[in-house]
Length: 289
Image 1 (tube, rainbow, N blue to C red):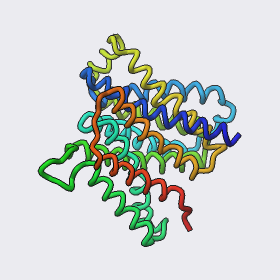
Image 2: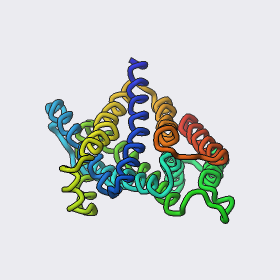
Image 3: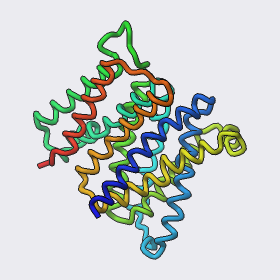
Image 4: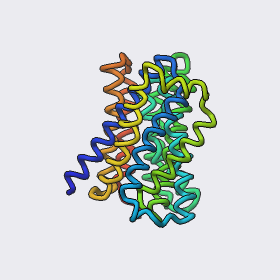
């Protein structure tokens, strides 16, 4: 069962990496990142509703705490998807995916402030190292030739913060209810939020456009199947192992961008990516005391 769990998490990570490339294709066709995010979540919501109904008897009881924490998670995933795609548009798939994986750093910072985690020299060294990696990745060490736009950097970091919000909300929601109910409620709020901010005419146009297939593929790969794979895989996989396997997402996104989309990365950017991913992996693997 452990091998099956690892395989499912691996599939989820690869799917998330590919979804960034699909979004880049749609943005190159002129579609707004908010509309792309909306359809990624909306198609995913259909999968979660069917999964919820399939396990209906186990999902009959939904407490107010599950509802509230799932709604909180929905806000996080809405921000994560949207800022991630904005970062791709302003920078590249590789940069956006790597900056998104600074999420554990923000989790630690909030934990320090709330006194949930004990502040240690090791953790502060890790946080400093991640910041160094961000400087290398974005080219901020040389202001005269910054390789990534400020918008791309800010949006990428915002996607990481939003990802941390989603993790925190979903973890608390899952502790009081089933993952099927948590995902369904979270993505329902996700769709409500983005529908308000999306261009209604563009949302409607996407349904009958020649790019409908891309939108469906994005939702199926980037949300519907991938989140189900990940949640099921977590049942049979230790969290630290799952964290390491999930790091394949930015690697997949980078390869997709370089091989299929024509993205280019300097040696310094590759080193910065390696520093960030390596440090976040250490943070995720080292147990808290």
